[in-house]
Length: 364
Image (cartoon, rainbow, N blue to C red; front, side, top):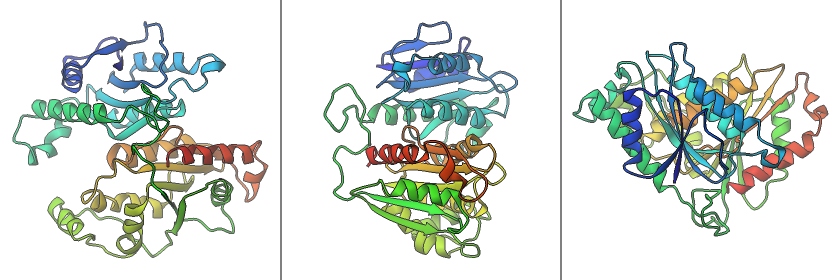
């Protein structure tokens, strides 16, 4: 049974997308006027209709109810998995509001499948690139892609690793690998980085797994300049990229082997570092070669003052929504520490690092 969390006044376009997603499956509709049921271990579809300024008050009201849950349900979406359908009256806001939905739900324990969202902008122009693949109208493409998302969503396993029926697995794999692999990516200086210090605090609690670290150094990686689609596809089939370098010889193979990729991200002007952003941009060549749906991402984010949520949403948009990595519950450990060493003085930081390691461990 799918729980449909939706707006009070959906457009005809959004309703058609929901119908295509469901394909006759039964669902329970929830909006801001609904009494909130137990939402743990559920399959959830967020269907959002944005207003002129890019807000869906109905969805926000539902989240306010979830965040106001009693302490006994402090993780009200624990064990749940979600996808998103979203429609805007204009060409703006679909990605930003979707990232906001994902961030809010993920903080409450919700998992998101890779490529979890289908967006429909005002006149459906965002589907024009899909016409290179499908000889169909923009509206038919919107419905087809919504249907495909529904199929992937419905196929996600419904049995956890302990065999408890009716609950979702902590990992998309039905059997655990003997020695799962974690890749940590960073572009920081070990002598001055609070973020790397925090990663080391987390890493010491990770057991029975292989951990590799890659330092994306200045001058070793070139950003993507935007090859034509066919050129990018040609090089990806040859396990490479037009621009070559460390990204193809070290980073791509390491990501391909990893079960989990941990992004170690100091906050630079409310964004990830330029070097890590270059990795994200170049990943297009890799995800044209392989599916990233079975790989999970986690993040360690440290800000000097504030804005950790901005960095988390950037990672959500780039890696979960666009590139297709799976987003496990509570994927980001977000802290504030300015001067080097200040992270060690954050209240309960050792306990928080240990609990985050346990969260990663559950996904292996």
